[in-house]
Amino acid sequence: MEEKKERFLDGLIKELCEEMNIELEMLSYDWILQLTKDGKVRHITRNHFDNNPQASGEIANDKYATYEVLKSQNVPVIEHTMIFNPGTRSRYVQEEEGVWGIAHKEFEKQNHKVVVKPNDGWEGKEVSLCHTKKELEVTIEKLFQKHGTISICPYYDIETEYRTFYINGKVELIYGKTKPFVIGDGKSSLEELVQDLNLPDKKVVRDNLSLLDLEYVPSKGEKIEISWKHNLSGGSIPNVLEKGELYEKIEKLAIQAGKTLNMNFATIDIIHTTKNELLVLEINSGVCAPIFVQMVDNGYETVKAIYKKALQSLFE
Image (cartoon, rainbow, N blue to C red):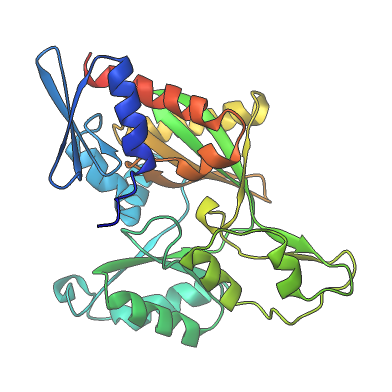
């Protein structure tokens, strides 16, 4: 039988447990990491830690719920409009407007350019940018095959998307994400230029490339973005943000958002728009950073120090 590959997080937690004299037991086919120290028992499931209250974690795992809670407390956050699947959530569908009435109304309101996504998604999966009503309808129908609720959001012109690592009211790390792009030389096709990027062999990358005309030959100096998304899994490059005015503004917003949801350990994503706005994009109750570790100098040591603080707070 082929040996099972150990997950990045499992290996890191094992290492920390040995260093911190924490007894570690793998349960439920390694889905549960059970940690024991000083008579206290704590758990990690996948990449979700016992640090957060259950209600806070459930809110963070639902993008529309996160939006509503943050908005209610006047935290700057990107807009969301909820759409219920009539097949599974029919009693929540507004009879007067219905699914398509709400969707088309939002599409017109946002000047025919909206982002559609499942409320329980991650890593930018199944997130689509729609420019026509047909695209919007096809996208919604496809998402309804697997999801009970989705959200429609305005398209924001993003300068940089930032990820913050938040623990117990403090921000430990902020890094920005630069979307993958190529610069034309007037001779090479887009496909040839993309090959030099060494993008990850992932479905999200293949999906992004499928939207491009790979035979197109960009003119010399022409910049072509491979994707409008900022996910590292899609080929974006992480850049650690140094302390300064921008860092302090992002830090302040992340702390405000984290405290509003009563989170203790999370990553909080914040966008910096070309209009110089800072808005919360989402809050992730599951914390994992395998790609960051591979792409940033001293990334492993940086992330390990963050997880160590998370484990310490579990047993305080």
